[in-house]
Length: 372
Image (cartoon, rainbow, N blue to C red; front, side, top):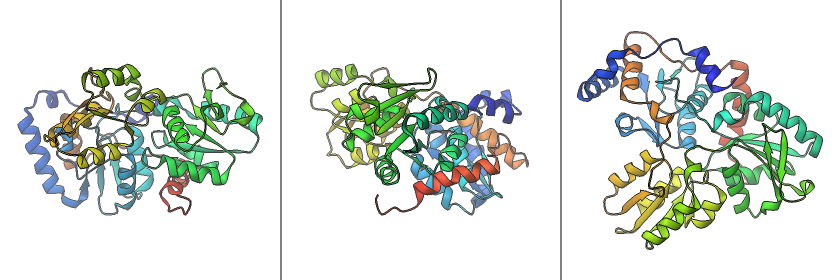
């Protein structure tokens, strides 16, 4: 089941119109009041890509790995109002107890990357890969994937990864099997494998639409099978953007997310997860200049938080995650006022059997590994 089908199944109501006309100050005051009233019963985790109007009310701010770990450790909150996208809320539901309720303020906050791999496609692709390579493949799925894909990977002995831990997880995977299927983001998989010393000729792309391999080298020598998927935000950063910054700002350092294409990562000074980007710029010398290849809300926030440095987007047009931006102040207030009335809108509930299998994949990521 893909995200749109989940929305149709789970969304039973739309946000009332009056929230769209409320004054910002009134909405902010209401959110503060409800947060204070509910206390520890309410927990609001926020992804770094969220708007400032929402982030200001976060109990925790992080990237996918941080929020997964926080969700796994959270045993106190009765309600988790997740300010992120659908797959993140699913992960929180999988990792928290049955008594805890996970809520997504807007059910249309999905992820185009996660939707690039659905279960029927993956099962057909896996069958073709088994015919080609035999039982030599371990699947890894980026945490930006549906619960169904995580469950499939869990059943096959694989694990989830994030941009923070993709390298050690890939190293671990190669201790288990000769080859790795990396889905659904081909760019993160390619960049991570390349950093481990695997040449591009030993990487093949699986096209789930054409149901065929794309390979520049000898298919029998392939070590990494990359699913043909990508992040719609990070795909907008181009080599031309890098060249433009080099010309206009020769003194600037360029740092990009590993979801960017290999050509962009190769031209940048640094590449790393959201946390890596934040940490590197925070530790940089005052007066330094940084062109950043990731989502615009984070870039703008870094620029505001670090006025002693010049921080700007690698893409002059700027790149926003449109689905992440669906979580706004009106939707957050609607979710909280509904809770105050005893109503749960937009609950995220993963089927128990699916959740158990997906948790295998998540647990393999979260547990310590000597090879990592």
